[in-house]
Amino acid sequence: MTTPPAPPLGLPHLAGCPDCGLFQRLPGALPPRAAASCLRCDAVLRRQRRDPFGAPLALILAALLLALVALSLPLLAIDIRGRGEATTLATLPLAFDRYRFWELSALTAATVVLLPVLRLLLLLAVLLGLRLPAPPRRLYLAYRWQAALRPWAMTEVFLLGVFVAYTRLVALAEVEVGPALWALGAVMLAMCAADAAQDGHAVWQALERRGCTAARRPLAGPQLIACTGCGLVSRAAEGARCPRCATRLHRRRPGSVGQAWALVAAAAILYLPANAYPVMTVTYLGRGAPHTILGGAEDLVSAGLWPLALLVFVASIAVPVLKLAGLGLLLVASRRGARGRLRDLMRLYRIVEAVGRWSMIDVFMLATLVALVQAGVLATVTPGLGALAFAAVVVLTMLAAERLDPRLVWDAAERRGGAA
Ligand SMILES: [Zn+2]
Ligand SMILES: [Zn+2]
Image (cartoon, rainbow, N blue to C red; front, side, top):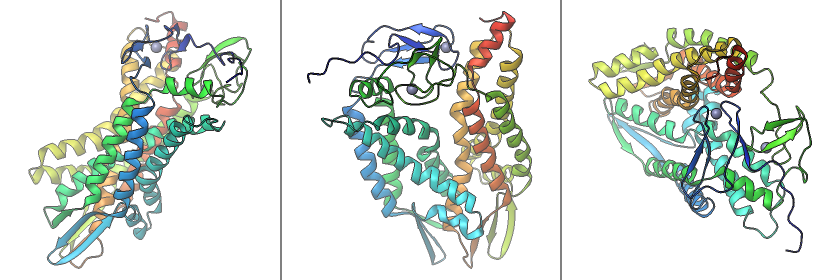
């Protein structure tokens, strides 16, 4: 190439901590497998991977091929006294729709099938695109979108939900594990390995080097702002667009406290019907009994399945309460400031962010039961209103954690003069 090297779009030696907002100078290159953490709050700012392009590409290709297998072959089949029923991954989410819970159908289809596949395709586009002699300029959008989709692609949570459903089904039927379930397990492993081998910083630098960016020139503005989409630090004006990934740049997320409070309040209100109404009704040999979330955990205890009862209790009851309380605490701290203990608050924030999606286990377990045990003479599982409310609680708390800006906690502490 004869074109002269372009000037960097931002300040590449600086990193803005996404959790506490502190700007820090980073060494130009870290040794392979090394990580740089924030001096103030311990957040990981950058992690160097050994092979950030080749290994993830191979794993993503493998995951996509396995996903094709998982989507086309039978997932689970049951046999209750000679009457059989089978489901595939593609038809499983539709089961809710038969009982007019199309919202649950849409949520399951999106989080288990559509978004994981879409995310894999976007990653594939970026990693393959970067190998082209002239990569398409808008490749930066694909990489930004895949990052946004990451918490909503729930393959591993779904697998755990299927596992819980399986242990319940073996009590009343002969269950046959189909090849798609093994394939889906392999998809999950390949996706996790691909995420572990990925290096967002290296990919963004490569996109910038190859000219796949929103703008060609760095911004000139009055203050340092770190992009929440790609991490680039720019001297920019509030509300300008990141020159690398076109995300709007704000020193702090505008309106985040009010929006997060509204989402937390809505989730807290819906938590009541989620626990009071049955999540499902199990009819067996003509007799039906509604089950609430707590009742489901109790059933597992009485069946002697202690570890599973604990899992369901933690995922469906403890985690939502912990999330609501944790989000409330962080929101109060971001307005009024906290004295000391800020590192602990950041630990809480990271836990709340990481565990939220695991509450979907119950919804996915129910999806599997409803898909397999349907309209039979012997047994039927019908979803209940509690399931809809519960799924809404999970989604709303996940959205609240995304809206919340943890840097405000540090700002408020600084105003109080208590930043540790
Ligand atoms: Zn920090
Ligand atoms: Zn950006």
